Amino acid sequence: MARLFGTDGVRGVANEELTPLLAMQLGQAGATVLTKENEHRPTIMVGCDTRISGDMLANALMAGICSVGANAVYVGVIPTPAVAYLTKKYKVEAGVVISASHNPVEFNGIKFFDGNGYKLPDSMEDEIEALIRGGMHNLELPTGSRVGKIKYRTDAREEYINHAIQSVPVDLSALKIVVDCAEGASYYTSVEALRELGANVVPIHNMPDGTNINSNCGSTHMEELQARVVYEKANVGLAFDGDADRLLAVDENGAIVDGDQIMAVVGNHMKNQGKLKKNTIVATVMSNLGFFKMGERENLHMEQTKVGDRYVLERMREIGASLGGEQSGHVIFLDENTTGDGLLSALHLLEVMVDTGKPLSELASVMTVMPQALVNAKVPNHKKDKYMEYPEIAKAIDELNSKFAGEGRVLIRPSGTEPKVRVMIEGKDQRMIDEEAHKLADLIQNIML
Image (tube, rainbow, N blue to C red; front, side, top):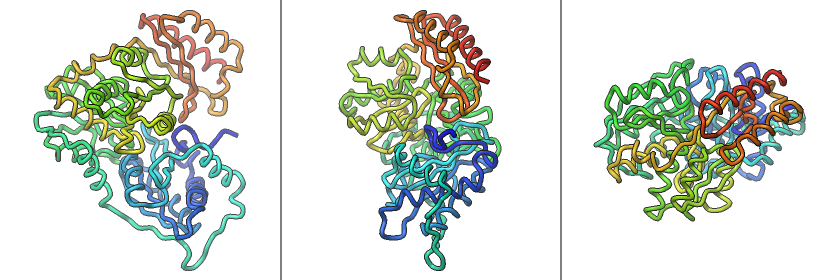
């Protein structure tokens, strides 16, 4: 049976794979494992994004939390990084976010943070999963006054906004900014923070109705934002995903600035100010080759991890780095928050624009983006880790590695959150790598389906 927890919590189609029963069990098991060292009644913070299934799953999860004698604090619709920050600030024992990030509305997810605002290590997730797989035996279910209760807080998002503004108190009065909120959790926090800092804000996709999250908008669909930035003659465009833990940008000419470029711009600025610890940026194997070449040229030390912002964070903590992230836009500023934070990423990027007086297009040119093709092969979820067990697929991958050796690279990996195998090829010729990536993805899909 496949592992419940992927790279970013438990994900699935809400009410089909991620059912209210499973949410309740995750509440029970999570509260039990996360608070087992406590002698007092523990408290767990719960927040969600804007998807319609959030209410259903949040209430089931909190019922599970209360049923094992823990209390819940429900902070409603709020970005994932806000829950990470507020869990630590409020000194509660754990935090939970109900979100499927950039995925379509039918999906949802449940991810846990410990009392310090960090995502759980695999070992703790395994412990939670083992309780559920074992039928929740020996679980103590208190009665009477020992049952937990729920407290509702509507002011939490303001505290998160204040934290972001105090962390990067930049004057944005000279900038016109188009903000795509993805009909998600940033629909209020990002717009309000930028306006409080003086920006001329043009918000789009900031009217969530529960069903439109990530629908042709946000960091996974940038076309409208690109056009709007040019039309508005704006200085920059900002695109968040559904739970606002990632950010992508658009320069004044409508060109996309991805997570690698954001880290390059901000990292160099931090280095020049003496604020980049150990002159190091932690990135994943999926970062563009051009990003690593930029690091060599600018005397930045680049650490690589496997894909997933949790692994970036683990490495940052191990070596004492202050900046790390992914090409997809998860950028972690560890001095200010314990997870990827779209709003902090936006403010740091805007701060470089203000401090240097340079347009984003010029700043982003610090790295040359090498042509890259990324194609997904849809495969059954329980098979996605086994693609190298198929001789025809293994042979095709070996041949591609030989073909691009020295002039590019081939990276194949299972998705941590979806039933897909991702094929990524980098090289000098965009048409060639597109053809080869599609050919390999089609082969994987046809053989493994």
